[in-house]
Length: 109
Image (cartoon, rainbow, N blue to C red; front, side, top):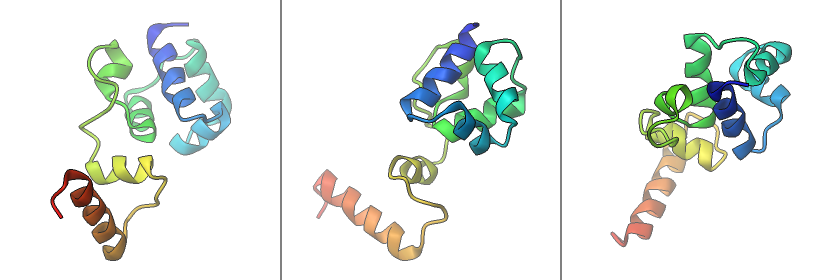
């Protein structure tokens, strides 16, 4: 197994997903996804981007192991929604609640 495959598997396992669920999230056949994780198939550029988005990790980290695996390049709303297991887009009310919560945690209110 190569290093990219190891990091892809690590990103999935941190989220407690199965390989089948991961394949579904990124729109791949489960056997194709398993081949990528096993290192017998190289992921395409589009697959790397989809995996990074699905698991909120940086493309740089997936490819090189360098940098922070948490990806600031993924829009904040997407990362918050993923972390809180919310579906996008957020309603205006949901967004207001999250903003108020963040403000409270920072001590702004």
